[in-house]
Image (cartoon, rainbow, N blue to C red):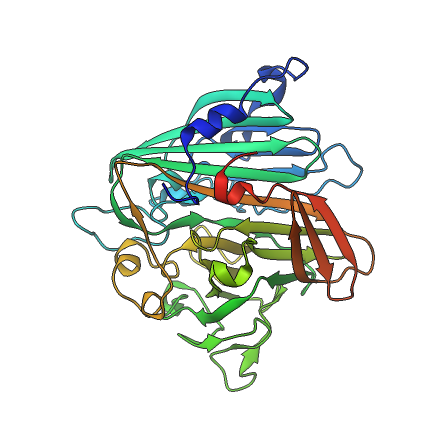
Amino acid sequence: MSSRFTSPTLFCLMMLSASNSLTAAEKLERKVIHSQSSVVLSSADVSVAITERGGHMAPVTFFPKSDRPVQPYHISPWQDEKLTFDVPVLGPLRGDFFCLPFGGNSDEVNGEKHPPHGEVAGSDWTLSQPPKSGNNVTSMEMTLQTKVRAGKVTKRVFLVDGQSVVYTQHLIEGMSGKVPLGHHATLAMPEKEGAIRMAHSPIRFGLTNPGLFSDPTKGEYQSLAIGAKFTDLRHVPTLWKTPAETDCSAFPARRGYADLLSLFSVPATELKGSPAWVTATNAEAGYVWFAFKDPEVLPTTVFWIENHGRHGSPWNGRNSCLGVEDVCAFFADGLAPSTKPNIVSEAGIPTSVELSKSKPTAINYIQGVARIPAGFEQVRTVEFTAGQATFISTTGVKVTIAVKHEFLRGGAL
């Protein structure tokens, strides 16, 4: 088994109980949060709510006991309106959720017709392992039996004492064949234009969506060019002559439009063993949100830029968020385009993962929040040492936090 995959036995080792830990009942709550039945896992540093339908992770509260808690994730504005949806993922839509197959999945493939972002994003998960605490780690486990492509997906969430970090692992068993997959982290946007500043680890290049993303006949509008290549988020081609470029490193921006673009990480060898990363800095609120990934597993980051640009139901022109989606996929087009040759795979960048019934596939992922001082405007780079990450601002200010980024490759905490 490749080092990027995790043996299920490692999970058992991580769950050794400690005599001084809180009881499971004290670590877990069940609540209805914005119309969705949710389980809430907590530590002193983080509180994580996960919907039982779709396994969507939000709200997540970092520094919950402080006078300045941080809740970075988006919750869709139609919650609590008692709507019904033909697209199941729209029901609980919020925060971060796992997608398999990732994307719209409009076409049937080999007898499989998946809903957008797969059954895992809109079906009911079961709490299969109540919280356990030990060795400063608190965790929980949920499972889902898929039907369209029969198999089992296990969602594991870990919190580590003293860390403002959420570790997740999705273990895929019993399936075979190619599939696009990944995480769909969705960040809330403040009202002030440009308040969020994005940064990322080195990329090969970026591409705007290769086809029409927002259809005006459906009350949708986009601002970015179609299928345009770029190398800098600050200079992304638009549909217009003036301005011909726009800044996609600062959000919210371009009110009235909804767009999609993808960034493609450099190979893992160029990162010299360090994770690939993406950050969102809110200097006014005093924090930076981050996500770390193994670029061998999730080579692409899709930006879903939603700024009041969709006017059909349930959007109704009111949705503002930024999807920061670390995936192995061809944009958000789904199973068929991701598993066939395409312009991204022909450039040597995988757009699907080969699953095997004979061995599980584990997708490990890290998200978190770091406090930042005044003068920290935007991340320039991130440096990694054993059990730590240091965020270095464009102004030279440094912030170091504890985070076991080694989890990405081995799955151990």
